[in-house]
Amino acid sequence: MTASLTSPWWVMRMAEYLGIRPRFSDNLMHGGSSFIAQLHIARLALEARECHAVLICYGDTPRSAPSSSRLNNMRAELDPQLYEHPYKPFNPVTSYALAAARHMHQYGTTREQLAEVAVAARKWAQLNPEAFAQGPLTIGDVLASPMISDPLTVRDCCLVTDGAGAFVVMRAEDAEAIHPKPIHVLGSGVAHWHRQISSMQDLTVTPAAQSGVAAFVAAGLKPSDIDVLQLYDAFTINPILFLEDLGFCKKGEGGAFVSGGRIAPGGALPVNTNGGGLSFTHPGMYSIFLVIEAVRQLRGEVGARQVKADTALVHGNGGVLSGQATAILANSR
Image (cartoon, helix red, strand yellow):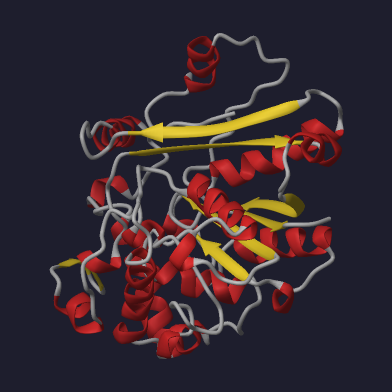
């Protein structure tokens, strides 16, 4: 299973490249949330005995060979349903800036609180030798960096890097037979309500409110049972919205919730412990790295950034707050 920003054929190319003839395959495309949504599909396929093991993988090179932006612009020119396009928004940043501005207006969220998300991510990245951006970053640095789409500056926006990742999903009994530390998927959920930001009914409420409930119900857990979170942080407003919609704080309280280093190293709730899309990596789509980091944390494999964790929540975001996917993982059944 895979997905791509540039071609609908990558699942076929993957099988060709690996020299395999899969019994089951899928290239569900929900943008950046695709690989957690595919984790949900893989669970269903395994439960139905359609296959024995599912490989979920992704790789892209938007930094060294930028092509997806040009292709997306071409598609927008040809798609009459994208009625925002004639107004030339600088998407996706402009769309997320609308959500950030609305949250600031409606709930009093501040630019400093948005910046807290970027600073926390950088502090985690400084503990991760694989992170792309490891230099010092302060709230003042975020606020003073060039404005991209008001109120978001360049440091409120994710990286553009090359990168790749993969993981394998199996039935629990099969995984336990071959791996000393299998990580269990306790629950998952997927939701999408819109494609364009102008079609959102409320710019401060995302489909994470639906996908999160599904994952928690399936897992039989609640937010207070989660030890570590990996949230798709394409922009600094994202974790604030997702913390609210997933039930870690009330709607409108996300800005205050992330303040004071709460989600940074040493804080009460570790979030994006590899540095996230803001400081670790972001090769076009990011959610595969959420799963990989959660697994590494639950196995105790990440050295200086290791936290005490038996449960992890991973949450992917695709489009412009469009497709959301949530999964809850644990190091035991």
